[in-house]
Amino acid sequence: MDPHVIWFFLVGVLLVGYAILDGFDLGVGAMHLFVKEDAERRALLNSIGPVWDGNEVWLVTAGGALFAAFPHAYATAFSGFYIPFIGLLFALIFRAVAMEFRGKEQWPWWRRMWDAAFSVSSIVASTLFGVAVGNMILGIPINASMEYAGGLKDLLRPYAILVGLFNLSIFAMHGSIYLYMKTEGRLQAQARGWIYKTFFVFLALYIITTIITLWRIPSMLGNFERFPWAWAAVVVNVLAIANIPRAARLDQPLRAFLSSATAIAALIFLFGIGVFPNLIVSSLGSEFNMTIYIAASSEKTLWIMFVIALLGMPFVLAYTASIYWIFRGKVRMDRFIY
Image 1 (cartoon, rainbow, N blue to C red):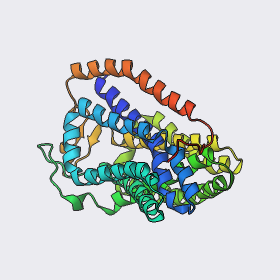
Image 2 (image 1 turned 90 degrees about the vertical axis):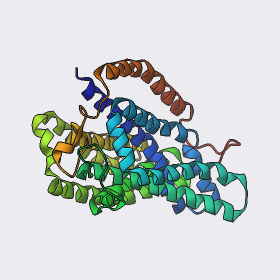
Image 3 (image 1 turned 90 degrees about the horizontal axis):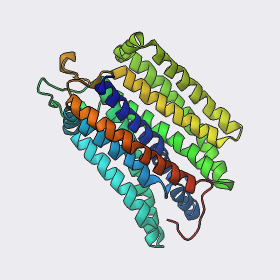
Image 4 (image 1 turned 180 degrees about the horizontal axis):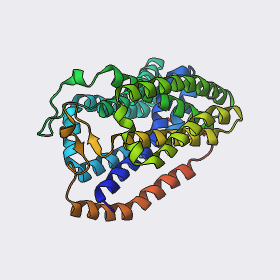
């Protein structure tokens, strides 16, 4: 087994875990201002309150895995995306601060301020994640020294912004489905309505983004000739997407959520198989692409970390599963609330 491929896969798994788990957090934030009453906004916050910080651990872990396994790619990406990453960091910080500070005072203006901060920061974070993915697909100016040779304007291209909006639509739909699963009564009915609205926005952007991607970057299909079994992910993705409105119509929130999670996982897999074996594609020439072999640590380091990951991953999964089991069911508005 090739340790470079193994770690490419493991980093992908961590990103899938983050996108599925923190994706509904960000989606709930994106939909937060669509409810008007204070009690309903508190219900939205409490639907993610017990789990949001644990969800973000997956992002930290993915970043740590990328740093340890592919340090050259980590350094290049963080230098190239420095300003957007700072913006993302501020957005994630404001989300956390807004959730913790909102309930500290009863003043209406105070709560409205933090409600806006929570929602706007969730929208910004969701969009920036997508912009980063769009740039990774298009390629960024990386020179022979593995250094970023562009500026901020090189990252804010129309295609990258399109992928950013596409990602926002995915998370908004995912968060709406999560709220449909976790709430009841009038709020649940409202969340069910959001599912259909966000789904059709997502579907439109999905079709547009797919067409433009295949037109502008036909190389994304290159690996499907080498790995024909990867077409199964396309089938799974389409079936999962098609099942979302069906499950909502049949009043099956868990199935809708699992379908949404499967669609997200399949999309990330398709992105990974499209760029493999590259971690960062250079727009200055394919000879400057940072592959999993060029950007990696030594094989000995990769194998040692793989053993550590095998020992530690069960604890992470057990912790995540236990938290979701403890806080299963509908939102409870008790004394431990935001």
